[in-house]
Image (cartoon, rainbow over all chains, first blue to last red; front, side, top):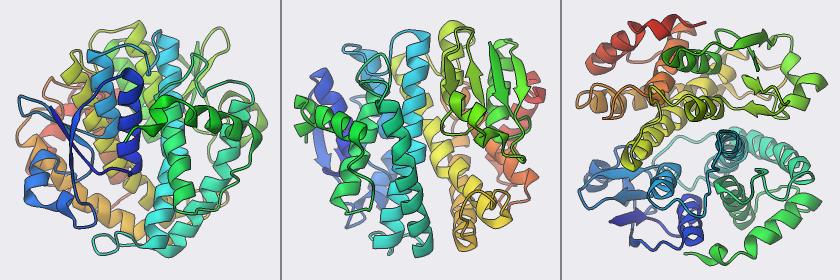
Length: 203
Length: 203
C-alpha cells in the first residue's frame, strides 16, 4: 500500500501520528498542493474530492479522509486502541473527535484559508468570514480547557484519535500565527504531554 | 436512557432514521432551539457545546454529536450494520460519511445560517459567506451523482449511515429552498430509494 499525502499539513500529521502510535510504517508519495497536483485528473481518479491524504491499497482501492484511513488501520491493527473499546468509549472518542474537528479544526482552517488566501487561486474566499472563524476558534478553546481540567485526555479512557485531532489543530494554528488563548492552563498541560509522546515527531 | 433533541432538524433526523433502521425506540425530550434552551445552563451541563441531539444514559453519562450517538447504538445493537463490517467497509463508510458531512452538509448548513440569519441573535453571520457556501454545495452534489452512477448506495457494501447523512442534508436543503441541481439522475434515483425505506418516516 501507499499513502498519497502532503507532509506538514494538519491531516497528514493526524495520520502520521496515529500510525506512529501503532508502530505502523507506510510508504508515502508527496502530492504538491501548492502546484494543485491534488486537483489534476490523475489524482482525482483516486480521490474525486481532491483532498489528501489518500491511502491506495494493493488491490487499487483508495481510501480518502484522514479519519477513514485511521479507522482502517484501527481495524487491521487494533492495538493500542485509539478509537475506544466499549460502546461508551467508542461513543466518547467519536464525540470528542467531532467536537475537536467541527468546533475547532474547521474554524481554524476557515480562518487560515479566508484570511491568508493560500488557496485563493482555486476557491472563493471571504476575509470577513475568516475573522469570524478566528473568533469562533478563540471562543471554543476554553471549552476544551474546561474538559481537560477534569480529564487527563479528552476521552476518559485515555489518549485517543480525539487528542491527535485537537493537537494537530493547535500546532497548525500556532504555525500560522492565529490569535488564540494558548496559555490556558489545562490545554497547556495536556499539549505538553501530547508533544512529549514519541509519536509527535512522526513525519 | 433519554435523548434530548429537536425534531425536524437534520441531526435529529439522522439519528431518528438510524434508530428506525435498527428497530430501536428511545424516549425523547424536546429542546427549544428557537428559544435557545440548548444554550441554557441546564443543557450546557449535559453538552457544553450546546448542540442537539444529546443522549443521556441511565448512569448520567451524556453522549453528544449525532454520529457518536449512532456509533453507540451500532456497538450495543450491531444489526443491521450501518457503519460497515470489514476493515475496508468501515473505512469506506467513514470516508463517504465524512464527504457527505464536510463537503455537503457543512456548506448547506453554512448557507442556511448565513443567508437566513436564523441564529443571528447568537452568532455572527456573513451573508457573502452564505452565498459562497451555497455555490460550493451546488458544485459538490455532482460528485455524489458520479459516485451513485457506479454504486447503488454511497458505500459499496450497501445502505449505511453515509446515505442517511447525505439524504437528510438533501431534505434540509430542499426544505430551506436552497438552489441545488436536484434533478441529477443518479442522486434522484438514490434519493427516491432512500425515501421509500420505512425508516424515512421516523420522527
